[in-house]
Image (cartoon, rainbow, N blue to C red):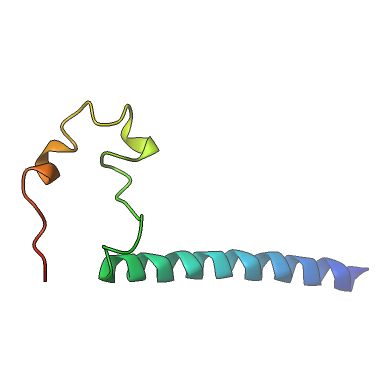
Length: 70
């Protein structure tokens, strides 16, 4: 009975750490390849945390200058 309890705790902890690792790997990949992913800065336009969309000036600063192509 105690073994099942300890295995369950270990499994939950392992799944949590795996989720954190996958998120970090994805952030690094998205930073190196911005043209491939939908990963966005959560403080700017286009995210649910920015509020009511593009009604504020969050989108105006980035839209004025096009991104350079390498």
